[in-house]
Length: 157
Image 1 (cartoon, rainbow, N blue to C red):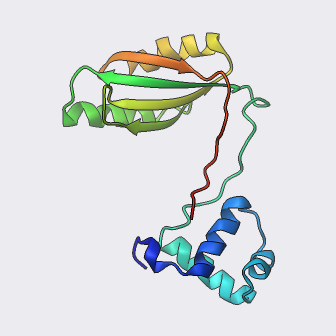
Image 2: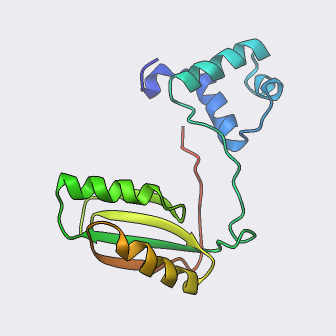
């Protein structure tokens, strides 16, 4: 299986859509939803997993209930844009759990980070002890989220 949407048929896409909505869907319920036998569906799910279309399964947790109610995006501008600085920065962000996502971007800054904190005091502490200590950081811009309007991990298929 190659990494192409054209390699997937209508049933594969339906399986992926069902699993995006509910990753805990039993094989029997999934088979009913796509009108195939459980054995055939299991084989397809295994093939989709081996092919890298399904990366894994996880529970979505409520950040408010777990003391991480404030989402903050941070633009990071590095002091130099050399391969060595990029590698050091990428390695450093991997070890900090508060950094949920890190994306290298094109434009007026180098990286966009997504973090979740308890509150602004926790973010101030994080900025001073982690963020501004990351290798190569020259400048940051912080955007505290006032309202999360839409958040999904589902891909349109």
